[in-house]
Image (cartoon, rainbow, N blue to C red; front, side):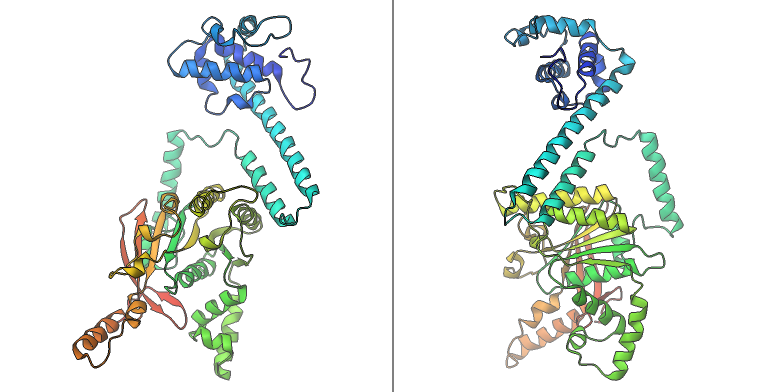
Length: 466
């Protein structure tokens, strides 16, 4: 079994496994050098896996792990060739690796394990590709394969930073903010009021932008995307729109820049002068660094694969995903409920943001609870489908327009007192939008008031005249 004669097929390094286990049995402190990245399942030989796991359990519980203390755990284990498993423990100790070599042996074991996993993945890809199932499309298979390969690539030593290195990188980040004039530690949204609240969108941030239907969350996301893509130092923005087409997004961008209502642009109800204004403005917009993907019903794996390809092609500074509830779960996996499925997606998007080192703005619908309350202002509990959204997000911001609800509560003009009060409230709310920051990891929550022009779907810093 463990003498090395049977292992001829999958990549392995039996000698490294034996030498490493021997070193741990001789000096238990050797485990500290490898425990953070070496797991029992990395071992090829099942007996070696059991020995490493048993030794680790004993050592972490404050006990000694030696051939003597571990003897009782392996009395009934099958023999290793011509010797018992207990005798094999003693042989391992007598052939221990030198302490300064144990980390190298551990990395060799992990690499062999990774190669075995890659072979198993390749076999799985072949089997799935040859099955020709009608409900398993080629794009889904490719996306899942890329996702699994990326996960395998991320199961290496990981990222461990000495605090001295962390301090150096943090000071560099603070200096960057200082050079930009202070207050901004991330990518600017293009809005002074929002930047002042969140300090910019940081690399790896998952920013959930939520709101009830018709509140303008897609409009605000597109506005921010355009601001980033057309800034003095522009960055590419990747937009995953599962509801709007690219031309619908284009109409919103052009309406904002031309100051012409979007519905008139869509229907062509514009004058010749207005068309010339649109055409002239469009020349500059062709340079906007926007990349738009309009694939519907994206799974997390397919979106991640597309985002990685987009990031390789462009200097992506921001991703926008519109919107969460239109995404599907993992292909080929059973998910017990939509809540768990949504949680899986938000956790995956947060991991993707960290992996690609860019912020992701994730749009999300609300449930209908806020519409039932007298105070329609949304709360964290109104996030639709999952509390995991709140947990994974670095920022949760709601778009709320009181004017929308007031319009639907117009009293009869015969009731003079009520109608007069309603008119005053409507005047105060006209063109005003509240951006409610319900969660901020590194700042206090609160509300920012912005101006919103419905016809051109444009948000601006200037507060509406009241």
